[in-house]
Length: 475
Image 1 (cartoon, helix red, strand yellow):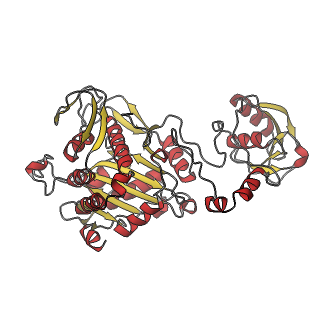
Image 2 (image 1 turned 90 degrees about the horizontal axis):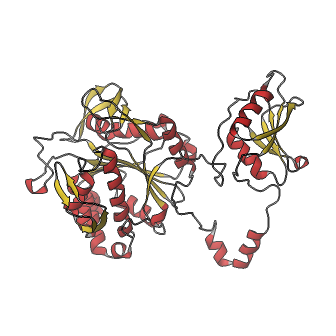
Image 3 (image 1 turned 30 degrees about the horizontal axis):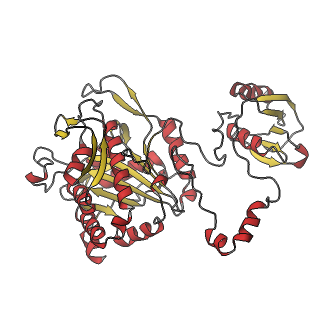
């Protein structure tokens, strides 16, 4: 451990943007890894086949990913940020990739730059600051790996299987695969596979490449999680040495990695989801070339990372069927079964159901907000709710959704459309559900969450581009 730790280059990268962390109390115990694949050619030899530092000076984030591991260690989400995406770079101190030192030069905040610029301008601190602003996550680990480090880690594992649907030829790298099929590839071929961005038949943006990177890392993950690697000290040691030899980072010592690995040892690949950050293409030339503009879908980005913070399952993710307390259930299965079958006292936790035609009462309990019941009724009816008997009510001190036994699901569904209201259980309501408007209500009415979702957790955007690590495209 001491030997490998001594080979990892430590650099100051984290803790520069804590004000941008969103709902820090929900993130206690989470681990967030900012992963940069650097395109630096510093120290590259001709046989490495990655180019020359003289022709390609500096360092950019060729790959930018954020890996989120929640405190319960039951899943993992890896979000890719393509380099072609237009973003706003925060104000940053300059960084010299040759020396790995910060220069003291200050760069002002700048909009409409590509996502690989924060690392190019301000190195680890700047890209960490940018990613904290973008995600709201508290980033507590930073990893930067160069081309040779990537190749070395693949070669340490052996080979990694990939499937290609057709021949693959790149304008710069040449023929990578001469025909469709399944291939076992080594580090050199793997680097070409994940780097190529001018492939014949692709749109030649970075989004095609991101998809290949996610598929490759999924395949690598499935192999790394297999006993072939985990129970082979030689391969595991070789992997760690390759990782350490070409890695710059912070909070990535061997002890940190082993602790995390042990806590993830029962994780299955189907609980690992790769996501491409929500974006849209705006056709038209940029100021510098004829490429289309790749823009963030900011509202969907917020929804995605709120869902990550809340622990909401993402599309295609394998459900978590782990018992809440498996040790106790194993110790006394009869008692556990009895506890499971007995309903808890009071109302049960409601789930989101289909809201169309759901009968809802709306009452205005705020005498200073004339017309609130009418406007709210119109908004809910537009969404598909069936509002019955709208009107006034005696004054109340807050906005609530009142419900009785049997109406838990309807109340939970309505709350996803009226987030400013608090659920209030009242047995006298029976099966009815009533929105009672009180003073200070924000009047926000939104589309409800999808049926079956957890009303206590934010829903992710509906059109996410995901790759589930448990699904083998070669199968």
